[in-house]
Image 1 (cartoon, rainbow, N blue to C red):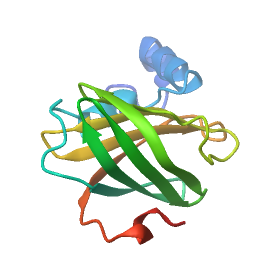
Image 2: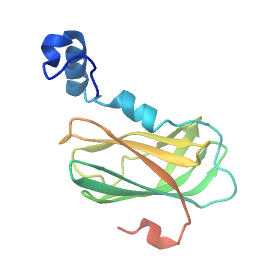
Image 3: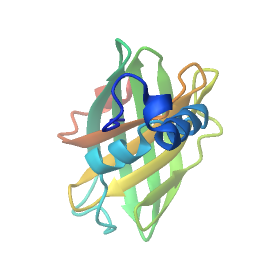
Image 4: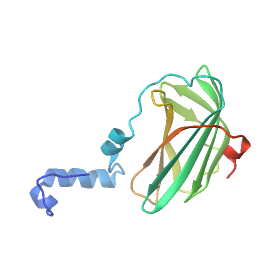
Length: 163
């Protein structure tokens, strides 16, 4: 967040902006507008061609980096199956999950996934204009959610889903 005309005394020079910044921080939304501008997701078409479709991306903050992989095994008529793996700071594993897709929103069943304690997936989208996948996840140990954009990569077989 950048505040103009405040100097180093933001609470005194720009009290309304300082209050909004504090409220966003406490609510876990700090940087949400900047992330949306940076990681905009457009297009709601279905995946094109025949699967599988693989996507990979990295997200890091505070000297911590996570590599994320999504492999969509099948997708037709707004439903399909996918694998999701994260490696790095914390291991995340979710294989063979059924999902539904409506517009950009992908809604997999994460209830039987191996997610670390305190980590939850908040949003998963397919951005058809860029042929990319956006994943937003939250770790209770960090005050803000992370959004990672994964770009399409060649699927190289079963090694895509092994942690």
